[in-house]
Image (cartoon, rainbow, N blue to C red):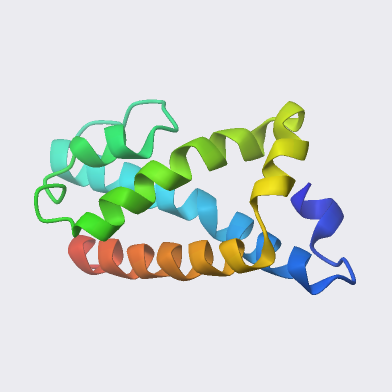
Length: 117
């Protein structure tokens, strides 16, 4: 869906695509934090709160980011599977995508700071 819509003429798809492009980075950043905390390979899961709980930064994670991870987990799973396409596009309005994008970018800045990157 991302590739089909990233150049769409409707602006609302641009917000969705910007958010969709940023989404995998939240999971990758958490997996890096797990590896950093445990010196082991992170588990193969898309469950962001579960990944975060395995890090040594989870205790100090702001509540707003814990809530964000709970919001993102079902969305990122649904975004990976075509059968959820209609449900997902109905939920992700331009405004909601813009909010999620801002929150996700904030989370990524925070976790990069914690990882010293």
